[in-house]
Figure 1: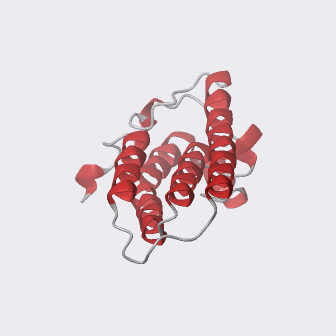
Figure 2 (figure 1 turned 90 degrees about the vertical axis):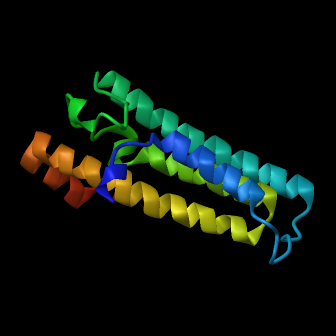
Figure 3 (figure 1 turned 45 degrees about the horizontal axis):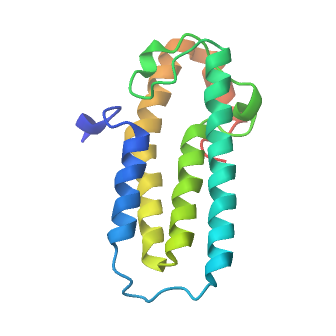
Length: 153
């Protein structure tokens, strides 16, 4: 299965899963949340998620390193400041919150299963391979960082 490692850009993974969430039948029924509350909650989650993602991208740009998740080997510096003090993967956390927002908006409990699929897929095929590359590039400095900061949150 390593053929999928670092191959599919995470935003594409999230987009495909969002489509699957939308297509998931409401077998369990819809959660009865008033529409305005659903929209408000979804908007808040999207704003927080995208804010976290953008903070991660800005930190990478400031460090003049690649933001391309498919080309982790092009990383020129280890970014450990800003949002990276709290999570090693803020861009993926941001996508996760965006998918959660979509699940809330859809009010379909089964849609949340696709969020779990996102976490499992991104961890296995994106984060773990990135961690191997970063460990080879930055050695002990990266290992120390991993010891201080969690993978997700």
